[in-house]
Length: 348
Ligand code: AVI
Image (cartoon, rainbow, N blue to C red; front, side, top):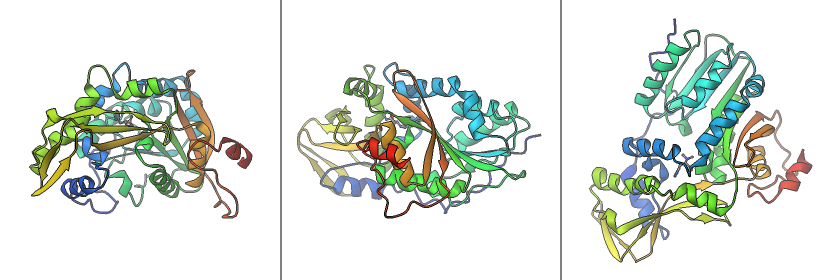
């Protein structure tokens, strides 16, 4: 009998109120206006994001799923037996199902998600499909986790699973800090299975984030609709357009909401003025070369063990292992901008 159906309280720090108002005001007050991407994912936004994942132009989801399917035996071997698998941002748990089916002797599965509702739904489903598996769900913001729940059976190692190329939505310094936290949580002998979106020609990237059906546009504009609904702002949605150009210098897609005319918007009794063509940045999605990402992971305390990719090199699933020693400060650690591939090769 699976006893996973009671959600334990988060062992992370207590969750703060979500701060939409203060973060929106702060973001719109900056010289380059911005709104944090986490506020794109309310109920409507999450539904639209699921639709994005099904779009013809949006290759990451189906490519990653295919890579996971094609290499599942090797992936399962690397994760190994008696492991505690921790999924950061487990969502509906669709990707995990296939993985769990190939990991028969685990000590337990710990899905972490900020949405208790989604977590409960997926855990109920997984518990009926895997009756022998200990599932200890954790409702928490995965950025705030202080420790990972224990399992009854002592695990041989802890492996984190972070699919979907969500790491691309962190700026590189924040990505390093986040991966470093995962390395510490997993500890010695631990590992990380992670999905990473690769650098590729601009046309492919821009098509993926500017789809013909306009789903991404709707998803992006949704943050303004949410500000109107929840914060009493008065954004005129018809006066902003979605654009998502690829910034080659930074190796990132930049999601923008471009003001179509000079206008001002009220929020929290403040006026924010826009010139025609001025834009709000709502999300960055960084793309990596393999050496670039390996360099970033190295700075976070992980070494690259294995890369699986599709034949068009669109996407990578990587297995990383927690390094047992701290890099010497005198050694040069390659940067995370993808330019130091040779340095990375030499490092290893
Ligand atoms: C969630 N994340 C990995 C998506 C991405 O590709 O950066 C979010 C997204 N934004 C627009 N389309 C998809």
